[in-house]
Image (cartoon, rainbow, N blue to C red; front, side):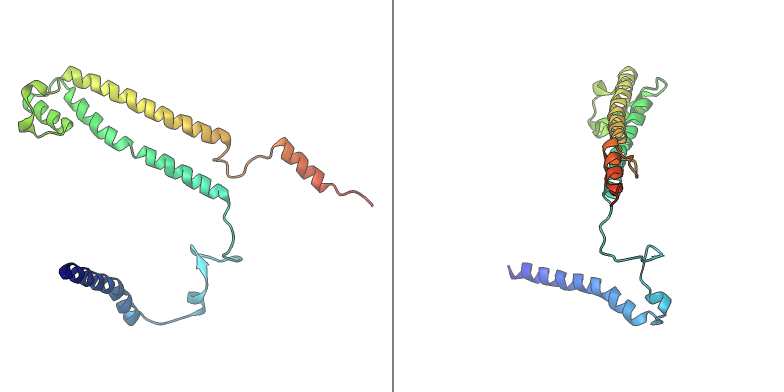
Length: 180
């Protein structure tokens, strides 16, 4: 038990030293030449305008979340492309039996010496798997397109949304000031 506590204590001290070491060395070695330009407050290379305690527009968050969702979905294309490429290599009828055995083992995630010759994927089976893979990715891409069309139709991708008739009428009525 005391060995475990000692290990945690040593780990904690080393972690703190590794975190604080570069900060202390940087503080001691960096030049101290303050100027008004260096002390000016800026954000992303631009001077700050107004208070920093403002609320962001929700449209930014919606567009950012939609980007993340579609970006992550596109990442699923890469494993599919890898498997599809292996299957299409197996579909080549000019492939010799040794290469077909190695590719089949890699595609089935087994070692080549553990794959019996009866379970090697034939060119015809590989071609059927390839067409099935194309159909699968088309369905997947179709679902993505339906989601994209829905988001576009809702107007979530428009930075400035058009006013509806009801909101235009409300704006017109509030703009009219009765004469006295």
